[in-house]
Image (cartoon, rainbow, N blue to C red; front, side):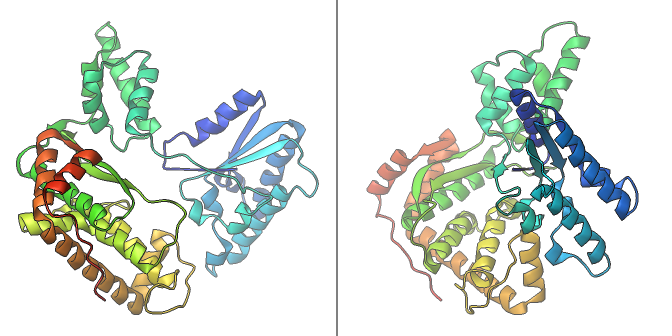
Length: 403
């Protein structure tokens, strides 16, 4: 199998825990370790040696870290294509087990599964994929409690959740170590104050920023309802955020679209309109757009740009039918940079859907304002509350895309 996820989420620990659970030895290796042995012949010999060692200790787990370092043979440059191809082919030969590897379970780990040669991931090789995401809010609290060996009062949970947004398991482990160190020097048990001291400084979200966040999430909410784009669950904004250089999401509007269903270009353009409705609401109500929608690969603008590019390059839902193999953000960005036709079409789609989102916001200003008021005052709003608010004003009206 292949384990994928951001750095620090516990991919290596997963493999080690699996070995302990199965009561079998684990051999940890990587392409970097094999390359450290010397030239190509030494690398291939080191690779064979680890597989032979695993077979001698079978049943056994062979764990190969940083699997994406093998690369994809379709993207190798001419300068080192022959060398890298031989490395990948050597690895494939061992995975196939032509000389037998019964009892050897091979587990690979990667931060980016899209960069791995498809032949490594095909059925019969590392065809099982387990994604390990960053821990959720409740996960982070539970992990801190386990690492500290004590319960944390619920009244502190909201602040801890906000302060650790985007943290991996490794990040949380460092917080726990630092808190224990503070308590140990004071010769007492760990207190919540020790944890807080080990976290980035927190600042309250108030005033103009809180209002902007409330308007932003209210915009997403109204667009989801107006376009009937999935099932809406609720929206929220946080009360505190970290005072550091990292961009921490200030809230969210939560909805779910079925994984399986009939989808047309309008379905995807509706999603783009929903994603852009946050900044559309800011522009309509506040007269300016803030920077929160365009920061990071999971931001509203990044997701909207990704969808628009794939519509044009991979789904035949743009103004041409030619298919591109580009899937990763890096490849999609390269495609936009080198193909002006794609870039122009994507820009047009984003502009049109942004204008449509603003039309939706203008047509439902009372509802947006009511939701924003509730979010600003209480920090959250449920689907039932939004339904009652909508009943008091004109029902949301669908506005179609204008080509």
